[in-house]
Image (cartoon, rainbow, N blue to C red; front, side, top):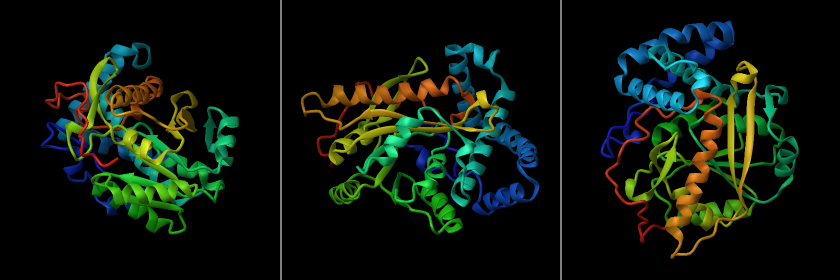
Length: 333
């Protein structure tokens, strides 16, 4: 797992070094197993403080986000955020890393979850069609795997852009080799990749992709949106992929909600589309609308759980693009 810090498109989040070693992650899992969650939560406070003090760019990113959140919804944080809020922010990130491991290595009982709409979840799990799930780095998407432990017939395919995420999932798969999760590291969606994913979706499998990280291809494959009342850029890849796969699309969220004192995971699946469609003529405008719908849903959850946002880089940075959306005509999707 990595703490992403971004300054320009030349300093891309995916090219950054990992913030910790996997042996360190294994030690954290061991610490939790031996001493329990309460001791773990106490130990990671000095670790969070260390990152706040010595990782200046990540600290600035946290402060920028928390300030935007406070301006949008001041009653949640109660007062203007300071460095202590960033310590708490990093502490929640460390908690999420542990939760990722637990979601892979052990069964998560349904009592651990609060489900937004149980009837819709039951309907979704009975749906034999393949699905494209668009997630984010808000909360912990690994919770969905824990939630789906009881649905053994579901196969999940996770698309990641960077080697660090792929390595992390590899470690988790070594912990639980019986997992029905496949990981694909993709730099771009070429014809071969699209055909492979199409076969999987047609076979009833699910494909997961993050919708909140600028792709390795750069800003020419992004669209402008508003998040927390400030302009940001999102990738167009998930929506081009959705059109190519011609399958239902859902948004999925899993995170520890402060309403439940962080003891339960709030799980929500949002209907997005039964099949994204657009023409060459209206592609730019339509993709922008889809991306804005996605980030608006992220914001809706984010406003209620401020410390679950785990994009530790300048998410709102001006990436030098002055046009609303530029779609590469050679993009393979």
